[in-house]
Image 1 (tube, rainbow, N blue to C red):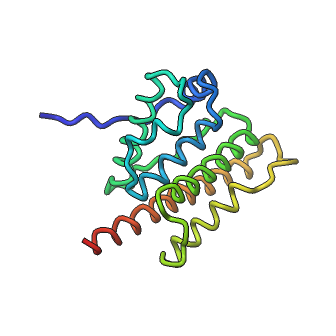
Image 2 (cartoon, rainbow, N blue to C red):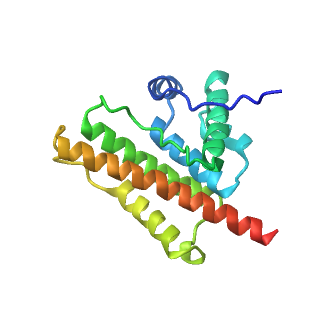
Length: 180
């Protein structure tokens, strides 16, 4: 019997679904929240509470699948975790705004899952969370549209966020495993 691993939703489709549901956050921020919650072992079924009461069942199911896919990616020994962001064809300022939204969501998800004080974490994990908080609050005014150097820097920043989220997940889960 084979197990089907859920996949992350298509970013553009999720944007449309969230807009139709009049959600108060972007697709990137939602994935950040889901990732933060997955890092804390917060229960996935409560994710429907993130969405407006009028959200269609299709969107609620998409968010539940997103949680399952994100958790599977974070558990993947091959480091298959993917940060759900606007694609490379999107203008650079919008990509950066998506990364800021994702980072904000991740910090919110951690906090909602009970991680409010980083002093009990390793310096590396605490630094990642502080950095993501800074990225979430960064001003995006006056950014260039797109250049090769800016694209490369964005790619490096996304990789830092991806690896940082993985580090936080691994640390929180190894602490829990040692506690049991």
